[in-house]
Amino acid sequence: MERKSIKLVICKDKNAVAVSSAQIFADEIRRKPAIVLGLATGGTPIGMYRELIRLHKEEGLDFSRVVSFNLDEYLGLAPEHRQSYRYFMDSNLFNYINIDKSNTYILDGLSKDPKGVCRKFEEDIKKAGGIDLQLLGIGRNGHIAFNEPGCSLDSRTGVVNLTQKTIKDNSRFFKDESEVPRQALSMGIATILEVKKIVLLTTGEGKAKAVAESVNGPVTSKVPASYLQHHSDCTFVIDKEAAQNL
Image (cartoon, rainbow, N blue to C red; front, side, top):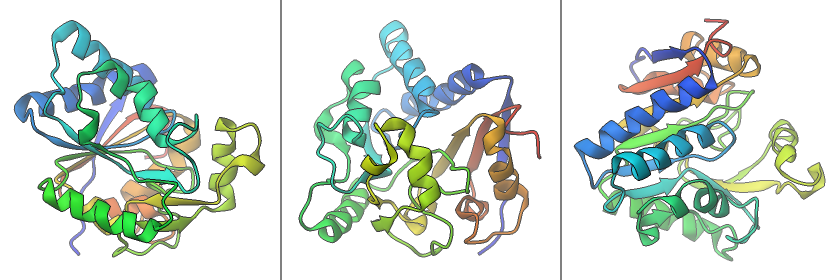
């Protein structure tokens, strides 16, 4: 695959990252009201979601025709569990905008047929016409969604095992590390690379090494985000601390 150049938007701080990224999403929603969004969870997107809520309430940003697909979900957590990604999306975005929740697709972490759920998820994305704009975060080890180091370029939505590093990083959201699920359902790398436009957000010096390796390093399964160099329209919106190794 041809190597592309990842575009960079370097902001002064995390608040500026939130505003800048929200503006990208708002512009795309206004341009295409029935847009298909790919959404992400975690600490970094919360600021962007708050800004989108403000734009909805104060400037009339309309989500009524938007369709969304979330990157991933923990295997074994019910939708109402406070650490499930359905709960996250409802409490940080969906409950405060005029989106039709029947148009918000999140993988079912309680399904007795997780592989079947993942196949249907891929089918639903195709039926929606593909994802127009995908939001991503990045892990300290360079993972995107729950695609950990060693993942395949041709991977599709499926069941993945979480590394000990990711389990430890995510334990801050749980009472202790033992409560963090060991598996998740996640979009695959090939699924992500098929979207039309990608925006990756991250902040802080703790992500600087992963950002530099993803943007300027070789394309390698050791740094899953480096696969984004294969995408024709990928932008990293980051703060100065995350950009310090570029």
